[in-house]
Structures are given as C-alpha cells and as structure tokens.
Image 1 (cartoon, protein in one colour):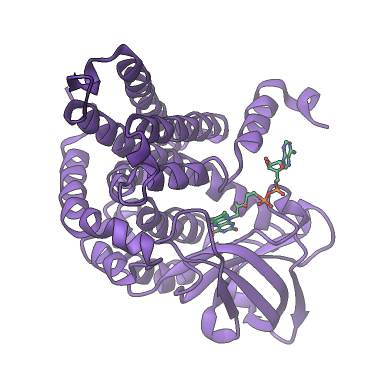
Image 2: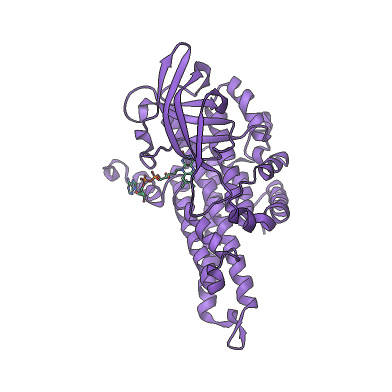
Length: 381
Ligand SMILES: Cc1cc2nc3c(=O)[nH]c(=O)nc-3n(C[C@H](O)[C@H](O)[C@H](O)COP(=O)(O)OP(=O)(O)OC[C@H]3O[C@@H](n4cnc5c(N)ncnc54)[C@H](O)[C@@H]3O)c2cc1C
C-alpha cells in the first residue's frame, strides 16, 4: 500500500520514467565529462517539475515539500548532480520569494523560475563563512535609491548559468540581525567565477561570485531589511528535507545496483548473493533506506502543515545522508574491484552521497540544531 496520494504517485511515475529515459542513460558520460545538463533541466521545467512545490496561484502544482522530495528521490537515483540543479532552483531560490517576497516580486519571479524561463541560485556561503553563515561579510550599503553590494560568495550551485541570485549581505552591523536578503539579477554586474573542481556531483555547477558595488534598487530587498538570516534559515529548514529526499534517491540507486550485481556475479561456483557476508550489509541498508524515506516524508508533511520543522528536518537530513554514504559504500564493496572502476556507477554514488553530509548544513550542524531544539539554551556555547 502506498502512503502517497494518487497525484504524488502519478508525478513519481512520470519523474521515474523521465529520469530512466533522459537522465540515467547519460549520467556516466555527463559526470565523466563534467557536463552540466542545462537543457535537460529546461525540459524538466517544461514538464512542470520546477513548479511541483509552487502554489497553484503562482503557476505551480502546489504539491509542497513532500512533492519535491518525491521528485528528488527519482532524479537523484538517476543522477545526483542533475537533482541538485533542481533543488537549488526549487527549494533554495523559489521558496524565499514565495514565502517572503512582495506580491510584485512573486509575480515577477516565481512563474518565470517555475517554468524554467529563468534560472536562480542561492548565495549565502562565503569562503570564510559556511556553517557560521551569520558571520558573513559581503556588504550592502545604501546608495541613492537602493544598495550597492560588495564582497564574494563561494560554492554557489547553478551559479554558472543562473539569471538571478538570492544574495545575503550585511546592511546593519554585526551578527545575524545585521543581514538582509536581496534579489539580484546577474545582468546588474555580478561576476561569475570559475567552476570549482569537486570530488563528485560533476553534473552540478558550483561557482564563486564576486560583487564589486553591484547596485540593487530598494524594491529588490527580499522581505524586510535585517530579516536576511531568518529568510536563510527558514529556507534551509525545508531545503534540508529535500536533501534528505536526494540522499534516499542516491541510496536507493546504490542498493539496486548492489542487489542486481550480487545476483549476477558468480564466485566459488555460484552467485555471490548466496554469501551471508554479502547479504547482511545489503539487508541492513535496505531497512535503513525505508526508514530514511519514512522520516523524510514525515518531515516534509510537517513542513507542509505549517508546523515547526527545524528539528525533524535536521533529523531527516542527518539520518538519510548517513544512509546514502553507507549504501554507496555497500555498493562499492559488493562490486569488489568493479566497484572501484569508473566504468560502473558505484564509485559515482560513493562520491555523490558524501555531499549530502556536507551542504545545507554539515552533519555536525544538524546534530547541533537537534541538540539545541532538545536542550535549548543549555546546549548553546
Ligand atoms: C557542492 C556544494 C554546493 C554548495 N551549494 C551551495 C549553495 O548553492 N549556496 C550556498 O550558499 N552554499 C552552498 N554550499 C556551501 C555549503 O553549504 C557549505 O560548504 C557548508 O555549509 C559547510 O560550510 P564550510 O564549507 O564553510 O565548512 P566549515 O563551516 O568551515 O566547517 C568545517 C568543519 O567544521 C565543522 N564545524 C563547523 N562549525 C561547527 C560547530 N559549531 N560544531 C561542530 N562542528 C562544526 C563542520 O561540520 C565541518 O566538519 C555548497 C557546498 C558544496 C560543497
């Protein structure tokens, strides 16, 4: 019995078919050649996948964070980097505008981003401020009718082809309360740096951005001035649930590969699947993947019900990401030497799984978030 609505099962089936036909067959080559499949992202948008969690009145399907998690699992099972392209648009760029933007900002940006007419990116992290994002140093000073942004951002997903950035910059002195968020068009003078070489996720664009007095009109402030970190953290609360969905997808692909291979590969006169030493790690990760999916969907439902989701979202990401890394490791081990070969996808899953323990808050930060929710001020340094 499926716990998903008919609508979600339909979108899951459609995404699975699309991923099997349009992404999976190319994933090895795209990753080997470090190709970011921008046209495939556009096709995904034309199928409505960028609007899954966008409210219907803004041109989306209104299927919430749960809908996005379902889509992410399917895409990530085919290729994690491609799914990251969708996540940066659908869980990091569109939601802050939907949740905190003015009516005019929503009308101007959301339908264009949901249809794939425009691409967006979320620019919070800096070279010296990742986990400690509230210490960011990019500044926005008042000039004429708006602000001039100066500084730089690092690790910006989709930055290589984005038309617009959600930029967090310091307007009002030190600390979290001194940060504001801005909608900044690339054409206003944002300098896009080189693609950062990475361990994996080779189909995802990750760049540095430089701002040298980039002028932004006052109406491009997102939400209220000094509300930047609230916007950033609220966005990440849901974003982490979506990354948990991505981790489940990578883990599922690794498990499917390991089970298929174990049944086919023979050693000592029969399939390796008959060895308990091969069966047990596979069985363990199979159980954990189901648990990770249930936890992820529960977190998404809580978010979609408008209830606080900081703790449950951190739990989902912490758990699902560790399952992804374990499942990928099991896949590599099950395939033996072939698991280490770049001609089989196991090593790609291994490299891609690792990112889910790092971005949108490392596993240490998820533990810190959970501990602070449980123990309040006593858990703060
Ligand atoms: C491929 C990729 C894509 C990304 N995409 C984006 C994006 O689109 N937009 C964006 O803004 N950012 C993005 N990031 C940045 C990402 O979110 C940060 O890298 C991440 O938050 C960690 O920050 P850091 O790299 O500065 O590590 P640091 O914060 O320097 O952490 C280093 C180590 O110290 C640990 N640590 C730090 N503070 C604590 C603490 N208080 N308690 C315990 N341990 C601690 C960390 O867990 C980690 O193990 C991306 C990163 C990568 C690699």
